[in-house]
Image (cartoon, protein in one colour):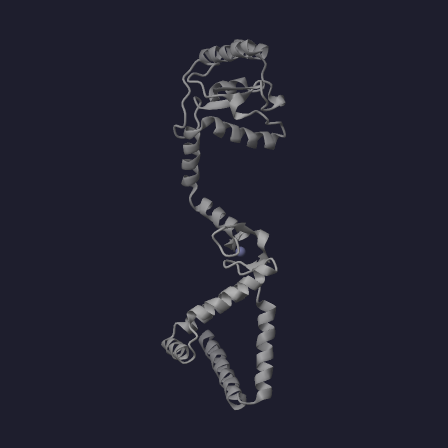
Length: 279
Ligand SMILES: [Zn+2]
């Protein structure tokens, strides 16, 4: 049943195609018919010229057309006859681009949209001083790359942690401060360097080994609500930082007394003692 229906549809389509082809053949030399066709094609192009899908389709069709042997032979013949070679066609394209540049515009070669020049990143080696692809396309590509290569980001983070731990801590502190709405004005110099030993727990700090660990260096805010400001920050171990939380020294002593775990109690007291020495 389906087969016969499909066959009928295909037959009908073929018949219609044949009819319209015959119509075209009969009229192709009729100027009126030609003008009408040209106007319709032009209107369709104008309506769709900024549509990326339409542009991609056109590019694809044009590429296919240009790659046929007939077309190549014709082009060679034309170039021979008129002396117009590829360079000349490129010159026309460049002139068109230059005309756009003068009006402060550029067509992105990725999405095909014509946009103001300031929506393109700068590139001094380019004739018009900006890159081929618009910022949006560039960001799309970056986002896609990052999503496809999560391991690169982790490796890069690790590299930054080892190369310059203070800068790394400061930039993550800035992010946290922004999220929590607290100030972050402390300078890199005010933080100083990362000590070999956690001043609160007296354990060696370890830098950039795999993922952050309890022995990683972390930036502590003595009074959390004050934020990352000079005089309120210290580099201590991640473990000491998480034990400390937002507690005060007397509260930490009280927690240690209540703690069922002997090791944790010792740690809590050490952090409390350090906190007292700080003030
Ligand atoms: Zn673009």
